[in-house]
Length: 49
Image 1 (cartoon, rainbow, N blue to C red):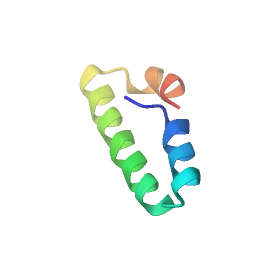
Image 2 (image 1 turned 180 degrees about the vertical axis):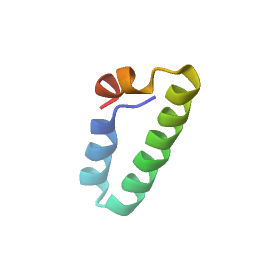
Image 3 (image 1 turned 60 degrees about the vertical axis):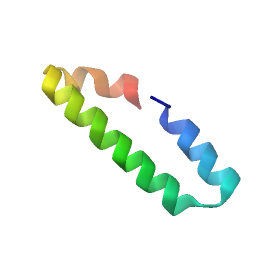
Image 4 (image 1 turned 90 degrees about the vertical axis):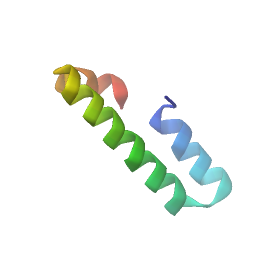
């Protein structure tokens, strides 16, 4: 799973910010779902961002 800063860098380099934002939102939603299933979403969130 790529860190958020990599997606931000990708957006800056390619100028396709809308695509990068959609990708990041999609990945954040996946990580949120995974964290909620694990029951430790709140504790993992600082490490994710």
